[in-house]
Image (cartoon, rainbow, N blue to C red; front, side):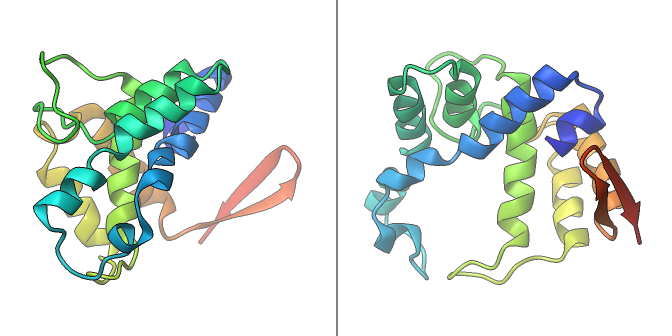
Length: 171
């Protein structure tokens, strides 16, 4: 939601992108915990199971019969790279929804900044450099530039909520 707001989307889009972002990994509930939390490299069979989580997430969201079409799209597309790589693989190359592009950048940032059983968390600067390096191939350039700019301004700051409708950023 922060990135959607940062790039100037309207309140309705910020909310819709935010809901989609919250639900993007819902399909991981279908992944066995021993695979999800494995400390080492996944076997090819385990990787196939893990790579199914975007499809499973979209299925779960669609089955709810709620007005969550954008969330289903983002769940499905959030691991598809700008150059068509990633997963699930598309039969025909096409552009992903802008919400998926935002969630992809945010998801990778979060994943790399988080300690995992198989690796330590990366420093913020290292992750931002990685995102910058992969702009135009893995990540959409304008979205990634805006994310890097936003994080450069906000990563070292803390939002202090002073009232129900106002937050103040402090260093």
